[in-house]
Image 1 (cartoon, rainbow, N blue to C red):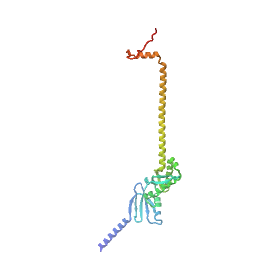
Image 2 (image 1 turned 135 degrees about the vertical axis):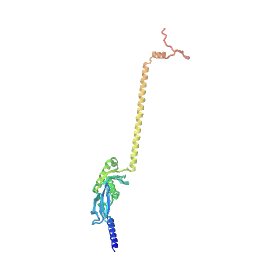
Image 3 (image 1 turned 180 degrees about the vertical axis):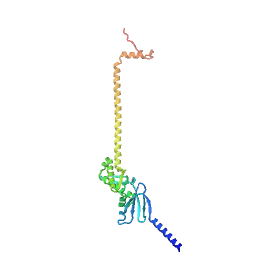
Image 4 (image 1 turned 30 degrees about the vertical axis):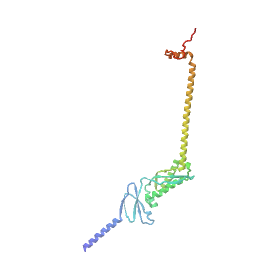
Length: 264
């Protein structure tokens, strides 16, 4: 009898230990994360029972859940989408944003969206990004976007940063990946080609003008040289040059040159 009672007592202790163990779990919040302890049952579906936790956390897996929100900077490259400018031109945007959860804002974010950070990034933040581009595009014409692209992108980033800041996110950086409409790209290419051709023709004209001036200068120099020769080449000088270059041989054909005039 005593042995049976002892067996029952041991079984009861084991059951109690198992029950306590099964109803209590432990997790540790990783570095660079904020922990959120959520009570699954409450008067407002647990929203009022969301609390910020750190370090090692003990919780009841049947009535509570623990989520971890990363607080380090995250970068996400969204799929491209199209947006219309004020005058109807269609631009393609391929945005990339870098953001982080503001310290201490995790409980508020979770209470509002009831999602993990990955799902919030893919849905809510994506929608905010699209809206920021759409609103700014509606304020700009095609020409103003192209000629003031940096100013346009700065305003998009400021608008997106303000929207995310109200939700507990800090926007670190944004790149638009903006792509112009095909007809705009073709028009720019044609314009650039025309400018290059004009520059090429202008350069060719400059070369031709330089060559023409060179020939004029050469002709003028040659004319002046001939004029100078005509002035300096007297008959006596020609005779002297002939004597200096004569080798003393008598020509085989024709008359021999007369070196000195007969004065008798």
